Image (cartoon, rainbow, N blue to C red; front, side, top):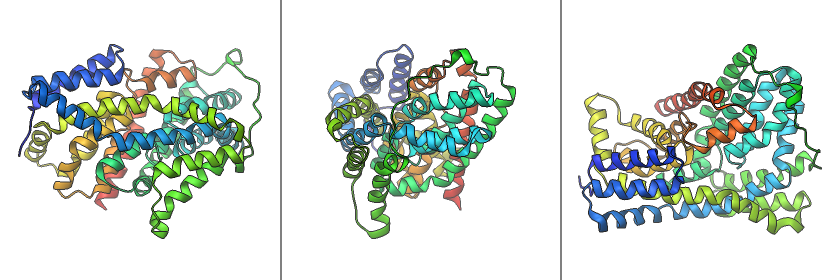
Length: 418
C-alpha cells in the first residue's frame, strides 16, 4: 500500500472544490484549486502535487478527444431539428392521454442517442409545455418526467459520463451502455409513477398566458432525423455482433455527418460542427479539471481508508461502486464529473476486490445519477429555467430525482448480484 497524499488532504481538496463551486467559481478552476490545496495539505509537497495533477489531467485526454468528436453528433441533432422531430413524433404518437409517458420516453431517447441531458430537457421542454397545457399537467410533473427520462437515457448513452466510465474501467462503450438497459427501464417506470402523482396535485398548472410558442421550424422527416443516431448505434454494435471494433471517436462524428447530409444541411456542416464543439467545450474543460482532483484522490490514502471502513462494517466490496458514484456526483453536482472522479479513484480498488469491470462501471455510472442535480450545479438551474420554475419549487423536485436515480442504482446492483 503506497500513497503520496493523506486522506485528510484529499477530503480537504474536495471540500474546497465544492465550496468554490457553490460560490459560483468556474467548476474547472474550482477543481484545480481544490486539487492543488488538497495535495499540499495532504503532505505531497508542491512539486509532487503539481506532477500528480498533470498526470491526472493527462489521463482524461482520451475521454476528452471522444467527447469533442461527439459534439458533431450533438450539434447535428440540435441544429437540423432532428432532436426536436424525434421528441415531437414520440409525443404525437402517444397522445395527450399518455402525455407524461410520452414526455419521459421522448427525453430518454433524445439523451440516449447522444444529446447531453440538460440539452435534452431544454429541447423537449417547449413541446412538453404545449402538451402539458392541453392535458392540464403541472410544471413539476412535466419537468420531473423530462429529468427522469433524461436520467434513464443518460446511463445508456454515448455521452461524456459513459465515455469517462468506459475509459476508466477499460470496457467497451457499447457493452457499458447495454449493461444499464434494465436499470434505465426501471428508472423510466418510476419516473412515470412519480410524475403522475405530482400531476394530480397540479398546484402549478401551466397557464395559457405562459405559452411562448415560437414560429414552427421546418423539421426533417422522422426517418431522416433518426438516421444519424441509427448509424451510431449500428457502428457501435458491430463489435459485440460481428467483432468489428469502431471507436466512438469515429462512430459519433460519422453519425453526425450522416444526420447533416440526410436532413439536407450539407452546406451548413461547418457551422453545425462548430456549434456542436461549443456545446462540448465546457464538458471537456470540466473533465480536465476533474482529472486533477481525481489524480490527487487516486494517489491518496482515501481509497484504502474507505475500503477499511467498508470491511469494518462487514459490507461487500462492490458497494463501493454505487456509493462512490453517489458521493462524487453529489460533491460536483455533475453526472460526468462524479462518474469520472469515482471511476478514476476507485476503479483499480474495485477490480482488485474482484468486481468485474463492466459491472463496476455500470454501478458507478448509475450511482452518479442519484444526487447529480443539487443546486451548486448548472443542471439544476438549466432544467428549472426550461419551464420557468422558481428555485424554491425546483428544490422540491430533488428528492423525487434522487428516488429515480436510486432506483436505477439498486437495479444495477441487483443485475450484478444475479
